[in-house]
Amino acid sequence: MREAATVTDEKRCLGTNQDGSECSTGSALLLPSGFCFAHDPARGLDRSVAGTLGNLKSNAKRRRGIDVGSLETAADAKRISAKLVIAIAAGELPADQGRTALAALREWRQAYEADELEQRLAELEAAQKGRAL
Picture (cartoon, rainbow, N blue to C red):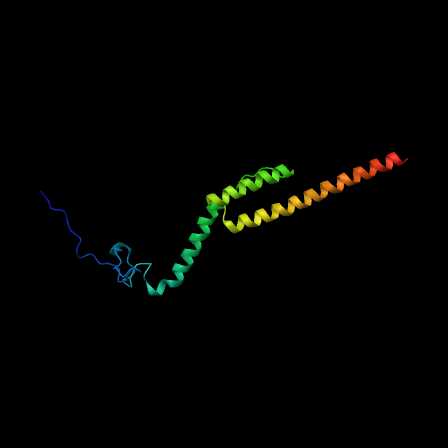
């Protein structure tokens, strides 16, 4: 029966983790400097770029969009507001994007209501002129 080979002499990264413990990255992932990618002092800019790209990719997955339907009436605005609030609370929509969407929706609703009032006023004025004749 063969004994299992032990890997006690395997090279490890020369770096240390934030908690002070030794890095456990094995020799397969070591760079020529003796450090892993995360600890190599010469790779700081590379790590920064990798982190930025990683954030862009993960944010793109979250930005898949929320189907809110059409926006034609005040009831639609109310329905969309509810969907946005739920999406923000569930983490499907970043809070800053949600606040922007809700502010735009608020502006739309105010413009919609002002337009409705102008149309009603015009109808009342036309009806009043019709009675005066």
